[in-house]
Image 1 (cartoon, rainbow, N blue to C red):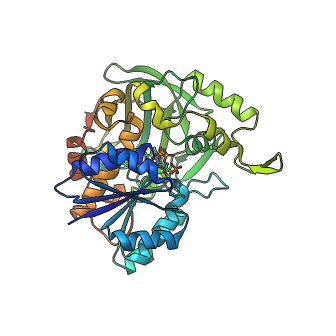
Image 2 (image 1 turned 180 degrees about the horizontal axis):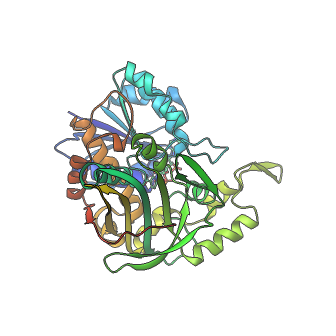
Image 3 (image 1 turned 60 degrees about the vertical axis):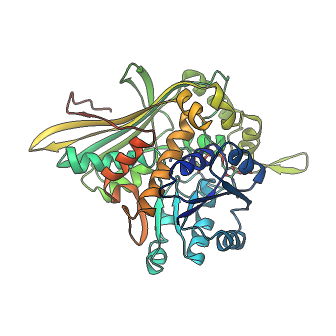
Length: 399
Ligand code: NDP
């Protein structure tokens, strides 16, 4: 009997609930809890498998402990917001339950993306014989596993990685983000950092641009270099990596809106006084932008997310490109979500399956590249996200 408790009923939480319900051989009971229980009930109503629902404020550790003690899950899947990572980890420690998430902890008042806060739980999880799996989404998540696959199977030494995330879809809205707008805009407007020769190199946000020709008919798109959290764990756990960069596609239209919003102060994350009330402009902006969940039925096109790894094989320079292509409309037909939520939610469930079946097991706090990539990718493919490997080919350095 493996019961899971999912916390967070947004775009990703919906996909996780749908996909847990498909994993009947492993997951036998599901509770979906979030701040607004009506959102949990709406998701549960879409799913034939019984999904129990609950209300919880995941910023409050005693509330979380009471919920976990009542539900008695084997694993907590955290798909609320990064701000809740530490409180949920604390509650898991207090109740003796394993933990999984898809995004690293961020303090509410600084857009600072780093694993230090969660890696600091290593000894406490280890002492209790518990496992925490961090960043089991697509990026971070599958991109870490792709890099581990390159290191295990295709290269003797990985020297450079370029993680490239393309959303070649279109939702037809003037401006909207594909996942939580607050988290998305904090990430995109942060200074860029990439890893080069043993140190982080900081540049202005989105200042470095390339044109990349995506496979399978997607074609050329502009990609922009930015910081992304998986690079921090990858360069720690695969120390042969000398250079790591992360790139994402943005349309000219998205960038135009973002620039204006920044210029007028709407992306600020500090409090401002308005009519005697304190508001955070970015949180207000989130309230007026389209809910990413509402984009599901509108979004057409595909995503292409992957890793180009370059290094040495049998003494020769070699490159491998490992990627997945996912179709927004097919995702919506299957689980009522677009591909951004789908590509995050499916790996979360595959990570959960790896933990519940002990294919991935350890005591302490782990990142995805620390485990065998092959059983994960096999399961990921059968659950809807197949892996394509282009082994060899032209050395395509992105600078
Ligand atoms: P949404 O904003 O759609 O959903 C977040 C959910 O968390 C909402 O149901 C929200 O409740 C709930 N929530 C927020 N605060 C609390 C709280 N204090 N207590 C209980 N519930 C709370 O976000 P997404 O579904 O788009 O994203 C979910 C997570 O996935 C985020 O951490 C995001 O960073 C991560 N992500 C990871 C990716 C990856 O590839 N690794 C890619 C995309 C996202 P309410 O409805 O009441 O606001």
